[in-house]
Image (cartoon, rainbow, N blue to C red; front, side, top):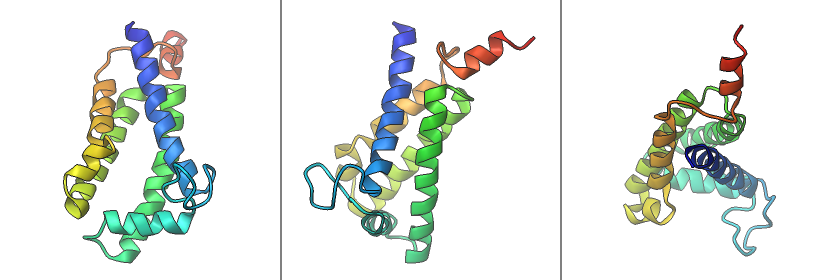
Length: 145
């Protein structure tokens, strides 16, 4: 069960990140379509600026680019299982930062409704595991010689 749980957790975190990225590039549909949050990059940047309301629009836009790059890189590394302790820890830090920014800008209900604290906690929990079966880390450890 431990193996299933860690692989499922890695996959769930990865798919969640990639789904959010897909939404901001219109892959899930146009703005206003059912279950679409942004639908375009510009809508996502506007949202990013509202989440980061404490920062200037230029910084908010930069944060949108950085978040998107990380939300592509981290799930790929989680899926293949490379440097999982560090990647999952960094994933938790990213999600916790997002949750705190949402809290500062919108209040506590928004990150609770979107389970951002839960995602951060899941990432932190993943970083505490001793081994990661079905991962590149496991393969590289077994084939070191």
